[in-house]
Image (cartoon, rainbow, N blue to C red; front, side, top):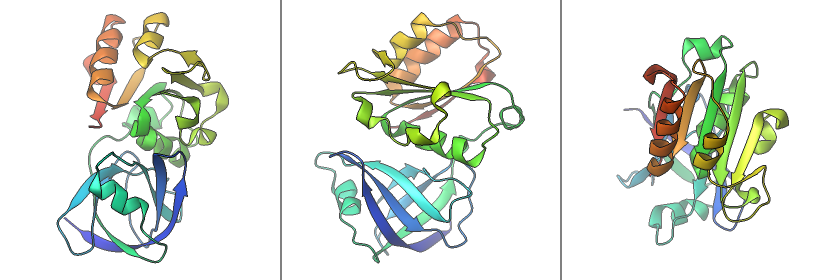
Length: 216
């Protein structure tokens, strides 16, 4: 797998725990929804991160949450501009199908930093016929929502009633009907994906209309 060196342009702080790592892009090519492995220069240690930026951006961005006692995420957070990081990839098949790209209605469902591939979807394909539902604890964790159309975005908050819906993503989908022709893309923790998939199946969505990517 191809491994290239990229220069850190900026660390953008979003919340006390979460930040965007922005790298120079060079000629790196990817399809929205794919991920890479970021590695310490010339070492094997690394971690998988979905690409947050769009194919039209001149840089590469990754949405990262610093994990308590997480050595690698802490290492990334404190990289100074001008330093280098190794990028291995792109990898993965969590990408839009032909129907979605051609205007079929899609629902993008995420928790936490699982919003990253959907941010890349929406910015890369402005013509998408989409809605996005993002589950977070507090509204300030709705990362990158300025890139989504406000009439197509729902933020579900579980700790404080400061979003569009107070409750978990699963609660939201128990209260709305989803058309069986909707193509649903789910990205986030495994519990959310399992629960929401069960709800969507109850609306008679066929298996091929439910596509998932688990963030651990």
